[in-house]
Amino acid sequence: MTDADLARFLAAETKSASVRIEDTGDRITAHPVGFEMPVGWFWFFVVLVFAGIAGAFVYQLIAGRLGCMDGLIFGLVMCMGPFVVWTTLTIMRAHFDQQTAPGPFFVLYRTARTLTLPRLGRTLAADDVLGFVQFHGWHTTRDNEDINSDWTAELSVLIPDGAGGVERLTVVTAMRTEQVDRLGRLLTAFFDRPRQVNRPGFWGAVRGLFTGSTGGHTAPSA
Image (tube, rainbow, N blue to C red; front, top):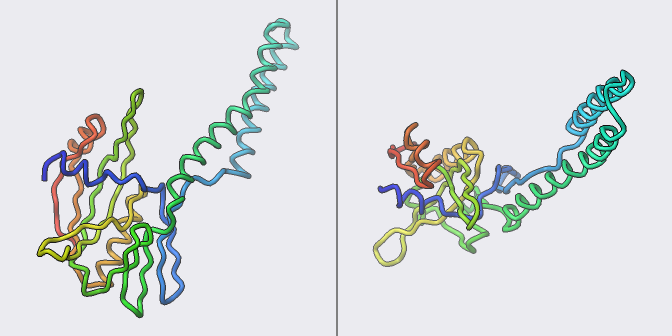
């Protein structure tokens, strides 16, 4: 498998930051998880930092080391600081909300022994599952001004395509690679099918960060 092939393997735009697993007994559902607006300790830390800065400024002001213009600039900075923090968090949350909007990654029904992929509108019976493939690497997106790379893992299921070949369907893609690996082991054990895992070596991962493609080695995994 070439670097270009591996890059296409991780071309999914529906990745999420993390995965939440809901187990209701007969049904296991994998939900995408985006960015949760931090509260409590985070805002306490922000207030603590601003209070420390304000205290240091007041001390310098009382000591006569700062002038009126310094006070004006400091006041503007203190007023804009919380707004900048909130705006940044809001933009991040909107970005992750786009990742979770398509809905659950998959639903596994234990009794019926089926795997439903809601995003693809497909339901697979146990006999349809030939195996699984999993890849860890850099998912790179490009625009006119910027290049963004996220270390991502993708798990796919292999099924017959009806013409004597094999079709690959994405099951889950997330930046929390250990969670994808956990789901890969779960589905492999449930369907009793092989799983091939591709993890790039150190230099392949470094090269992929700068080039947008990742070379690696494949190894079967139970």
